[in-house]
Image 1 (tube, rainbow, N blue to C red):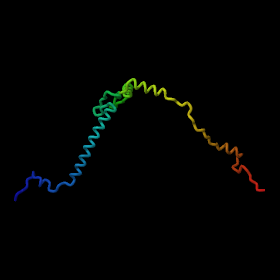
Image 2: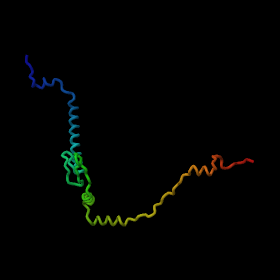
Image 3: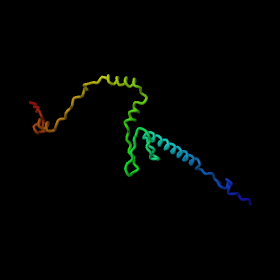
Image 4: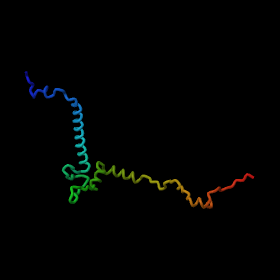
Length: 142
């Protein structure tokens, strides 16, 4: 009788695996997850100006200082880059026009407020009633 070799796919997989579609979905999900983690690392690296994998500070809006005796870093935002980011792309004429508009904006001196309502104190009410919680007036039917 003829034997089927071990390299033949019929012998290796007599019944096809039912979970091939499930395995493909899992592989697709892991690939998407790895891509999103990589893009998030890049976004955080640009936002915080720090390479978190190699623990190297980068040039940018934050200045990083290494703590003594540990692998921790402290980041401080530098004012130089903060001001540059705020005025990036503006020219002097538009900035001066905006400043003039802001200075000429009328300010209201008086703000109308609702009158303050004060609650009655229990002592004041008791004194008005002479310590008794009785009737204030008497009605006679004579």
